[in-house]
Length: 466
Image (cartoon, rainbow, N blue to C red; front, side, top):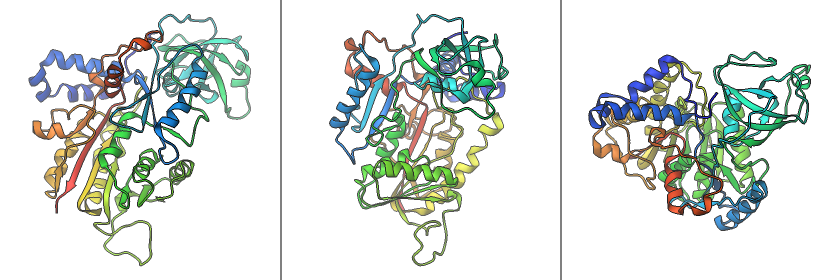
């Protein structure tokens, strides 16, 4: 039982990642020992949350300074005697950063134990409370109001309703139970609502439940970089090919001052509703969401007056392809249950979407390809394939460029790797942020930490030259 566990992967997935991060180009450049250290760092860091909670200000409704002031007051209520700064990112002016405090190493382990599933455990590490559906096991005498220690079952071996569990579990903090053991495990139907209120989490992050919901949008830092890199302009026609739940879609519309047209596609109806809900919540009117498969969004002929997909070639000034991916850059992730077959299934789909995107883009238009994963096959290898397949595409430099360069191993030249942007968890040196020393930390140092210690992500920017 350790705070500092590594992410649990299937053996074949771990070997696949090892081969990626210890490929011939990398080991020749930095040496086998250094490559192995980076790989081990990757596995460790993926299990820990980013060093900051990042939120995007809806500048369509309020200024950054005004929202920052409101947010600071709300956060101060949660942190009582601690003064936790709300930082504005210097290169992403609508992004605010709140340090995640921890890991706390002095918490007492309590006799009453609750075990939650790995997904719930990951959510708690990012600041969530425990909701009843995530609870797998609880001590025999646990009642509503009991003070409990919460653990995450990272191997999925705890039996539902067990009174104790001695398997591989990770301590994630202490809390107060809102329900008794009997209420949790003898209910006639599925339980909803709060199960454990976390009072002493290992990592402390602010709760955003019903807080300034029209003014701020929770968004990982690299996800906000994407919209700036695409750089949509007022009055343009922009396509977000795989848009749900709409974080990047709404950011694009905000950067365009809600002037122009942002077409958002997703092939799952409930997810399209989420895009529409977020657009309405943020009071953005230029977004039009459609339930449609992006791989089928191209047509040679179109019915007069038809607003939605499919679209004619060269219909868009800007296209964002934030592609479906294996999601291996998400943090924290205590256990990743996917098989190697599932992980490697995304490359063909990404290429189908890419082919459609290139044809839908106007000459002179900008295409941004991004993923929230760390594999070479879904990132740099896709760029190499695109440049070889589409002579009309050229890589462009990115602004802002706050992440690292592309990773070696796909045969791209050093000059091209510099044009890519990779947020690489293997580069992070985990150190944690001490609750009591925040006032002595340099602002620039915190920003540098925020740029590195975030989720794994990849961005490539292309221009269509003919």
